[in-house]
Image 1 (cartoon, rainbow, N blue to C red):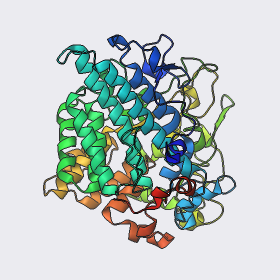
Image 2: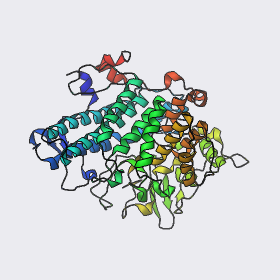
Image 3: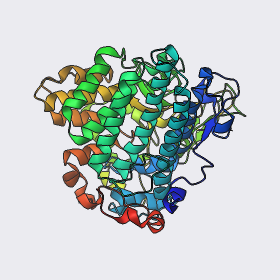
Image 4: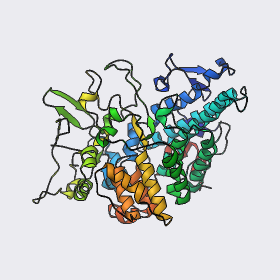
Length: 513
């Protein structure tokens, strides 16, 4: 076995493992420590067939939703940075503060590579395990149909990992089999093509439901896979595919925008009809004790918030801060609904009348935000409100930032905006899906929308979500003009493969094919 595999899948005991439960039917209740060797499984028992799928969801939650990865995903555009200069300061080097230096020795870069491949490795292994169940099933039966649908769920999780590898590192290894001996990287285009083809092979057999309609509540469906495939097709500029995927979701999925944008990202919005992909957590209704969570995903983004009436506080790590120019841009647009939800500004109050602690961002004599302050050592305290969970929505006496909240990954609003862009680029009218998003935000209707209108809408609607602003700038060619003044160049679009991995597998340094 080559050293690459050992480096790639650090700390995995074996790919031939299943994640087992403790008697509860909801797959989010399965923690990664509970495993059962494949040799102990009876593959003729169809009722056990979902366990390999559970393992992949568990791996995505425990490995994929890591705070340090989010810090890099969302810190590379012109609107947001990792925020702190006294801790993890090297993270600032990946964005506008550091001139897009992309230091590969920063500890979260190898973590990004390893964690995504851990997910891929587990998905490959659990697909093989699932196939052993499939060998005992009769095609056309209900159990065989479930087997085919379960394959799609795993492939969707695997595609999500490849998406992040390709958008962060660019050329990467398509790790198709545990028996693989060649680890030459593939070009970005080939990775994109692989993702789409793999999803297309699964989509016809997946359930045509919303995740909140699934037997395993929140499980990924045909429409989840289509939305992810559309996201990749958008990067390729294949607008016909984007339109086809998103048309099917819009016309047949039964999705709708959650009416209250403020609550969308909080407990009331968990697994609502807008959700196509979430990573689920649970505290089982207890403020202490058992908790199926997602590392420090919400905590690292958290501000310091205090309920002055009840003298209760919740404080995060103060990362992920917006550039004041972006907040001023939102205010100039007349944003109100999304302004309240997306920004936590030091010195202001939340809807619950909690104070956001900290020093308010500097303003000029005319009251406008001082955008130059964002380039100083004192980064303005304008935090990501989409990670905010009010104290009064936490369980009992819990005060941990974001506890018991799901991580939103893909929303119907993004599908509508992808559909609008695909239509406009294909010479069609994209007003209807575009204005559906604006209507919820209480923004005025626009007719004959342009690509620029849509990109602005994506910038506002999807801010802080999964590095989408950065990928938008890169795929449209706008990065040169928008980020170039900060030192970005096309050669810095992707982050280099971690040097530690190249040392163990020199093949990774070869030109991609």
